[in-house]
Amino acid sequence: MNQLGLGEFHSFNAAGRQFLYLVPSAAIFALDEPARALLDALVSRPRNRSDLLTDVAPLFPDTDLDATLRELEQVHAVRLIAESQVKTPPPNIIPLTPFPLSTAVLNVTNQCNLSCTYCYEYSEDKIVDTTNGSQPKFMSEETARQSVDLLLRESGNNPVVHVSFFGGETLMNYPVLRQVVPYACEQAAQIGKRVEFNLTTNATLLTTEMIEFLALHDISVTVSIDGPKEMQNRFRVFHDGGGTYDVLLPRVKELLKRHTSRPIGARVTLTSEVSDVVAIYRHLTEEIGFQEVGFAPVTTSVGRDYELGQSGFDQMVAQFKALADEFLKSALIGHHHGFSNVSETLEEIHKGLSKAYPCGAGLGLVGVATGGDIGLCHRFAGSDEHRLGSVTDGIDREVQSAFLDRHHIENKTDCHTCWARPLCSGGCYHEAHTRYGSSEHANLHYCEWIREWTDICLHVYGELAERNPEFLNRFN
Ligand code: SF4
Ligand code: SF4
Image (cartoon, rainbow, N blue to C red; front, side, top):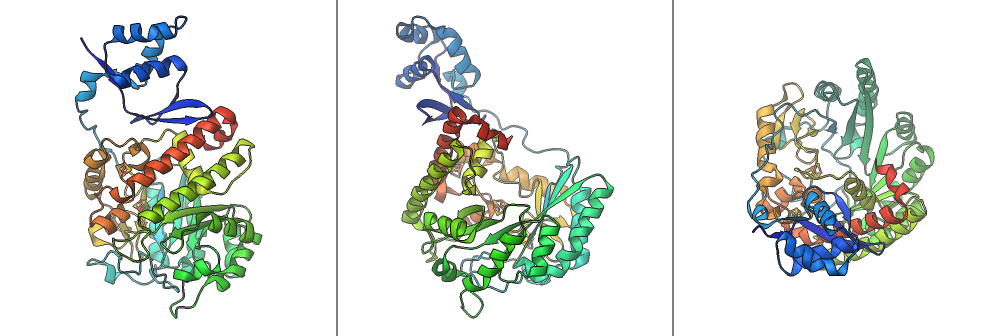
C-alpha cells in the first residue's frame, strides 16, 4: 500500500506558530496543532494513510483529521512516497513567444572619475573578451534613443517600461541623459505607455542643475556609497587615491533636500574591511538622511584581499539579523524602516515568487553597452560572450532562447534539493561568471548565507502576517 511521506518544505516559527514555506510553490502555510502532529508522525517514519490517522487520532479526538490531512496533501506538504521518488520531468522551460521587455539598463558611459578597488568594471575581475575594447567611451544620443525605441518596440503589453541609467559613472554622460529622458517620455506617451527612470551614481559629480533635472523628471536615484568617511574612503577613491567622502557629502545632502518625490537610496558594497552593517546603516540614514539602504557583498573571484570570507559572511548575517529585527519592530507599528534588503525579500515572499531564473537579466531586462550592443544586464553589456543583439538589429531571439534554456533552474542540479531555490534560483550570473568562470554555475559559495537570510525574512513575514497583516498590503 502507498506510503505517505513529507513533501518539500522549510519549516519556520513566527508569532508563536509554526509555518511551512512550501517548495516549489513558494506558498506559506500556517500549521495548527493537528497538522503539526500529522507531520511530526511522518518525520519519524512514512506510513499509510489509515495508519497515520489511527496513530494521531487519540491526540485530537474532536478533530476531523482526515480533512486536515487532505489539506496537507493539497499543498504538497504531504505526498505519496512513490510520487516523491519519481523525478518530475523538467517543465517546458522556454517561453516560445518573445518575452516582452520591461527594463533597459543603459550603460551611458564606461568611464568613471573614481578608481574603486573592487569595481567589477575596472578591477582585475572585469569580464574581458573581444568586444570590450571596441566599445566607445560614451553612449551617443542616437544610441540612447535607439535603446528607448527598442525597449518600447519590444515591451508587448507592458503599460510601464523602465529605463535605468548606469555606468561607469553615469553623470559623466549627463548631456545624453538630458536629451533621452524627454525623448523617452514623448515616445512612450505616443503609444499610451509610461516610462519610469532610475539612475545609479557615485554622486561626486552631482550639480544643482542635475539635481533639479532629476527631481523634475521624477527619476529614482541610487547612490553608491559605503558609509562613514573612513569606510567610504577605504576603497571608493579618486584616480589619485584621494577619498571621495568630503566631495560627495554636500552633493548628497542637496539631493536629499531638493529631490523629495521619490526615496533616495544608498547602495553599500560590503568587503572584508567595510562590513559593519549596523554602523553603516545608522550613518547613512540618521546622519546623512537616506530613506533606503541596501547592502551587497562584493562580487569577486577567490583570493582578493577585500573578499568578505567566511567570518565576514557570518558577521554580515548576524548584523542583517539585528537590522531585520529592527525592521520588524517598526513594521509592527506601521512605520517605515529603510533596510531595503528586507523589504525586497518580503515583497518576493508576499508575491509567492518561485523563480526559474535568479533575476530578469536576458528575460525582461537587458543591458545596452555604450556602442549599442545588447547584453544580459548592465554588468554584461559589452561582453561578446553574453551578447543578445544590438539596438539597431534587435534582440536575437535564438540566442536569447538558448541562454534561457541553459540557465533555467532545472539545469542547476546543485540547487535541486535546496529549499531556498524559489527565491535564489542559483544567484547572480555575473557573480557566477566572476567566481566560477561560467554564468551557468550556481553560486555555491553563498548558499549558507542565502538560506539563513531567507529564513530570517520568512520569520519577519510570519510575524507580520500574524500581528500586522495590513503592513504587507504595500507589497500587493
Ligand atoms: S545557489 Fe545555493 S542557495 Fe541558491 S538555490 Fe542554489 S543551492 Fe540554493
Ligand atoms: S545577472 Fe546579476 S548583476 Fe545582472 S541583473 Fe542579474 S543579479 Fe543583477
